[in-house]
Length: 238
View 1 (cartoon, helix red, strand yellow):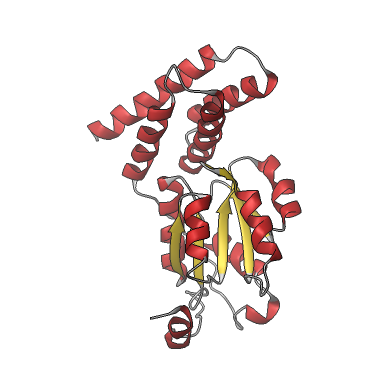
View 2: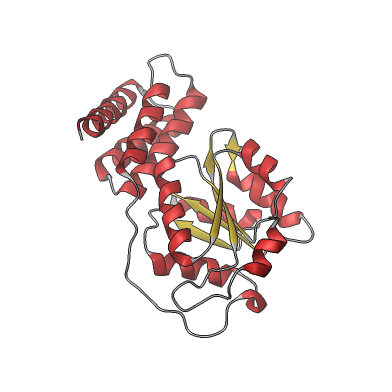
């Protein structure tokens, strides 16, 4: 079944599932954050497709045309802002392009690149997710009628968080290069915010600031690596 056939056969949006008929491509490298998006899409009626890097997203976009894209700004092979800029220039344009990041300072970058809306992590609220997508869509594509507002929040699989921690642990080695450390620091800031792990978010932020200021990073790197190892061990014990 192609995208057009899927849309034609899908029931119209309802008050409880206002995103029925939409296909959302989520470009996100965190398994934990992506699982949250999966649950948000599922409970809103949207069909989800996923990519974990720019290369995978571009490969996907050569084959399928989603209704909406939600792009994390920090990806392993580059900035999500570059993909946002590319997609904002393509005609016909994808109906809604949203950026998401654990760093609120990235909002200006995302909007300048051409995003219709910026979402700050963590995002777990069903009503906030639906509002973000619906307000980014052109008015003619928004479903008519009232939408049921709920205070429901999704709870991603804790093992997805463990997978993210294991991935970060592999990168936080003593011989990691500076590019890898920059990436893992911003990756962990976003993941930790999504998981509401304030201690880890602060440690990742300290490493990122030390790198930006050109200071000594070894103690910050060691502290962050230790916290990550603790979380991997805790999840295995669970």
